[in-house]
Length: 410
Image 1: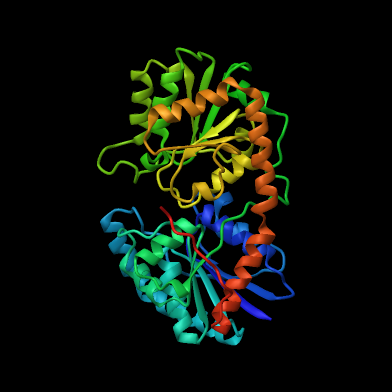
Image 2: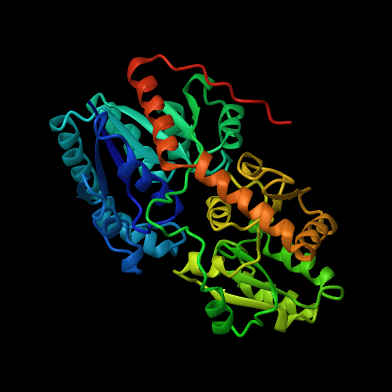
């Protein structure tokens, strides 16, 4: 039996943590024994703390570990203080974790591309004789920290969440023999992503007319996610379709507009300039995303070079047609003309035409939404993702991988 240790150094339970939690829960326990070393600290939002979430997974050995606090985005003085007070202790905790890995005969250490996950995972593997796997949830780019780039060069395997991500790794010089693609899945076992009949409650909560055609987007407010372009496209349609309403779900991302202030404020100003303040709702951060999505008539997120986009799978599982850009990993899960529409990046007119087509045709929305849900239930399941990941583990341990063609991206 293969013994796998996941590394989760961050405290916040984000999208990548959810993917790894699926693996931890659904990997075949007849083939794999699973444990996780996760930061023992609590996030400011306790309900979204990794440790609290992972404790709920059955048959998972959880080892709370001191990986230190997250310093990304913190002021310089705070970073220095944390380095001085916490830095000297980290090697001791890592040595203790290394002893655990040796004692438990861990064969594979699996972490994300987060700096501590990637660097500590590869380092621990080299110290203990285990194999290392880095799970890339973002494309390779120059902004990756030097420790991450070192880890990618030295890991036994690197897993891209889409063929798009895998290609960026190969283009950056990571050997193709070590690059694998395992497309993300959505856990539909717990009923979270089942279509519901309480959409009217959401509209009432936000004072949106029951007759409005509701376009929704759920994402942190970040310029790459396309909220600005979506506002412009919606503004084009309002003279013809005055019943349109746009709901923008998500909190301001401090990294969205470095030195430029709040990106939400910029979006709100754009809305005001188009005279559509009463047609756009900003919800801020929400924990009831499935409930809000269920009230949408269609999901639109013109994100630029999205690595894959779990939020598209979520909307599709709820039976919503998707409008997005035809780039990044999105075409690997959204089929143009079948489960939604894909448009040329930054072509606002084309984006508006796709929105208009769906807004005017309820039958098409229903047809595409049904196809979208069927796609997720048939092709993006936890079982399929785990089977593919087990194939990666076998390749790492045996040195032999099954043939796995990665199509060229034009």
